[in-house]
Amino acid sequence: MSKTTLIKNASWVIGWEKDKNGKDAGHRFFRNADVAFKDGTLIHVGPGYSGTADETIDGSRMMVMPGFISIHNHPTSEPGNKGLNEELGSPKLGQSGLYEYMPVFRIMPEAAPYTSRYAIHEMLKSGVTTYADLSGARENWVNEVADTGIRGVLCPMYRSAAWSTKNGHSVVYDWDPEAGERGMERAIEIVEEADRHPSGRMSGMMGPSQIDTCTPELIQASHAEAKKRGIKMQIHAAQSVVEFNEMTQRHGLTPLEWLDSIGVLDESTIIGHCIFLNDHPWLHWPQADDFNLLVKSGTSVAHCPTVFWRRGIAMNNVGRYVKAGIPLGLGTDTFPHNFIHEMEVAMIVGRIMSGDFTNASTEEIFDAGTIGAAKTLGRTDIGRLEVGCKADMVLVDLDHAYMQPVRDPLRSLLYSAGDRAVKHVYVDGTQVVRDGEVITIDVAEAAAKMTEYQQVTMSSVRQRDWAQRPVEELSPLSYPEAAN
Image 1 (tube, rainbow, N blue to C red):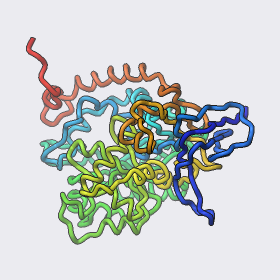
Image 2: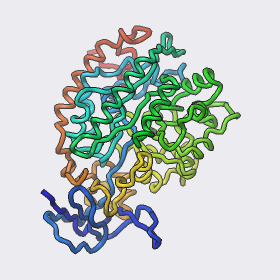
Image 3: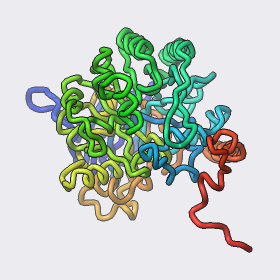
Image 4: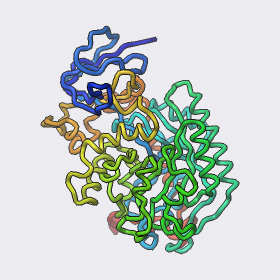
């Protein structure tokens, strides 16, 4: 039944404002304002709601803000790496953990329903209301995500080759182009299933996995399919020194130049990571101009700093991407899937890489997590609190001790309180977090099953490692266990 909900007299609201000419002006603080929604849609944002309401929530001592949008996540695999790969990278493979450790520690596919729910639990708890899920296609995926209450953009990954290392200092590719084509066919089925889901919260994205593991034909076909359907294509590119060198050796072009040469560097494409442009300080390829190529193309970037800073790697730098107008969103590529933590890391890394305390400001990073991310997905109905937009919102407890004093509630949230101050979360007008707890997911069950599957994975890492090392050697504990 149709129901109107009113959040009355919120102390702070991060609402959307238009200028006197009706053009978008951006997020603005509203004081002592009301937010009302009906049938999953916002019908009032600002002071003085005068309509009726079936339910009224006391907004005093609350900040109401738009739900966050996380555009790059691997929830089926990454939660299972906790305690294993936080401090692992390959010193002879550009410090990346992709080629030597990711295949060894990847949790079993059977764990996917549990790891996924665990990650979504972390996302919802940290205010994420929409996320992009870059995972392998599986049965019942659409329904499993929809059941959590989140808004999901499913991006089934597929590729023409698998990478591995046989010696810890070089990467080999095992090519099977037909497998990539079959994967794309299955991905299209998932996209169509998501579009048909009765919740209206599921959608899809094309996902050729990595620039170096896909044939140009597969990437071009994926791009064409995305454009035909009016959706996006996301691909990992410029994510490691190994990949940069591989692409320049294959083609004499940087990863971005090569994507441009095959006609897919445009507004339909999201590049996961996009760190190693030709002018990155770890590289020397002065003949290219990747940054301006990126700016002119309209291509979007998914920035995920946590997974890289753990290996001493960072984008150069997020502030210049934002200031140049590159559509940029944030993602929690690895655990924890705590989006507020990821935003803080983005601010820290941006400032350190630039040596400039004005880089990666609160405004820039909050925009990246909301309207910037919405733009990368081609949407204007999420990422902002404006009449007619989706009722995806977060209520922050201003009385939480870590929020005090509340001079600027957004800074208090991002720099101090984090997800601890997230009190209520709504997606499409339906509550999914109440009093700081996710009410749509049995996280205890998900965590227990995930732990079981991690144990199975750890018991067999020797068989998958090129040097046949046991888990205790590959990933020793922080301190040795006591002798007695």
